[in-house]
Amino acid sequence: MPADALTRDAFVARFGPVYEASPWVAEAVWPAAARGELDDPAALAQAMRDAVDAAPHDRKLALIRAHPQLAVAGRMAEASVQEQRGAGLDQCTPEELEAFRSLNAAYLARFGHPFIIAVKGLSRGEILAAFAARMEHDPETEFATAIAQINRIAGFRIAAFSGLE
Image (cartoon, rainbow, N blue to C red; front, top):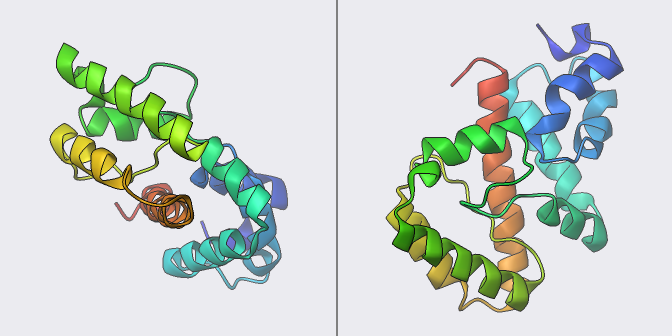
């Protein structure tokens, strides 16, 4: 169904979950969607990326903090549950689980927000290696990397929600 055929509430209900617990992104692009400008998934993804990029630092930080920690049971959006399951994070060995717990704690202490990575197509080992490597980033670089990864996740979700995956 084209985005302009949806009501505002239906659009936000469908595309609000694209950005974890942040329906404000879908709300920001609704006017363009209502005009029929975002019926193409690539256009929708770009508009949503642009809305995130234009947001103030505090709003971006809240967006990052809305994401769950990796391999840690807890409240998270269904899309995150599926993505983590798809990467096998629900099947960690005790050693991997301890590595994730340790890295999650160290990363959160260093950067003040959870580690974000688009896990689609990555193995647990690749995720752990990226996690360890990114601990070496400075906070500004890591903030930008987290936002870039969130936009990557959103692109995958838009494709899935649009039936293109």
